[in-house]
Length: 227
Image 1 (tube, helix red, strand yellow):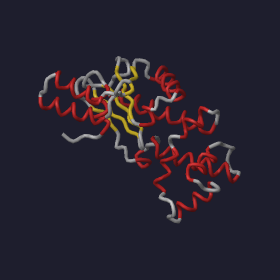
Image 2: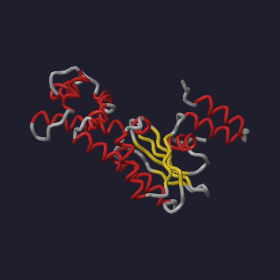
Image 3: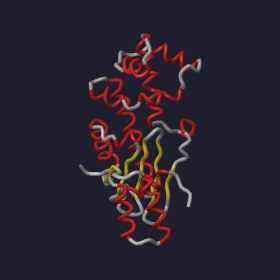
Image 4: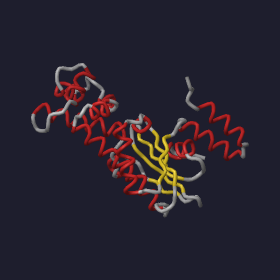
C-alpha cells in the first residue's frame, strides 16, 4: 500500500483508523478519513495547488519581509537581524545576492523557519502575523477535510504533526485552539507523540492482521523516552 505521510501521521496519532491529520514541516498537507473509509485530501503541489504554509513558505516570507524592512519598503522587523545572524552576512541584501548568484544554496532559506516563533514571542509584529497566517492555513485545511466528510458536527480527532506544529509554540497553540473553537468546535486536537514512520509501520501491521500486543510494542519502541 502506497500513501503519503499524512496517512502515516493520522495512524500514528489517532486512537482509531479515522480522523484528520495536518502535517506542517517543510511543507503543508492534510488528509481526512471518515468512519466509512471515505477520504478527503489535497494535491499538495505547492503554490500552484493553492498551498501556503510549512517551513519553506514561512522562511521565504520571512526573508521577503526582512529585505523590505532593510531597504525601507516595509515595516521594521527583527527578522532582518535574524537573517543576517543566521547566515553571517553584513546585510539581507548581501544574502539575497549570494543566493541569486549561487554562492549560497537558496534551499538553505529553510534554516530561518525555527526563528519565527522566537521573534514572535519577543513581540515582533511581522513575525506574529506570519504565525497567525500559518495557524489560519492549518485550521483551514482541517476544516475543509471535516466538511467534505460531513464530520464538522461529529467529535473527530485532528492530529497535528511536522516540526512547525510539534514545536508546541505557545502562540501557535493558542491560535489553533481559538480558531478550531470557532470553525470546528467538535474537533479534538492531538499532537502526535510518535513519528509518522510509526504510523506507517502500524498500517503495515494492520494489513498483516497483527495482534494489538504487536502494535503496542511497536508504538512503545517509538514513544519518547522519559527521563
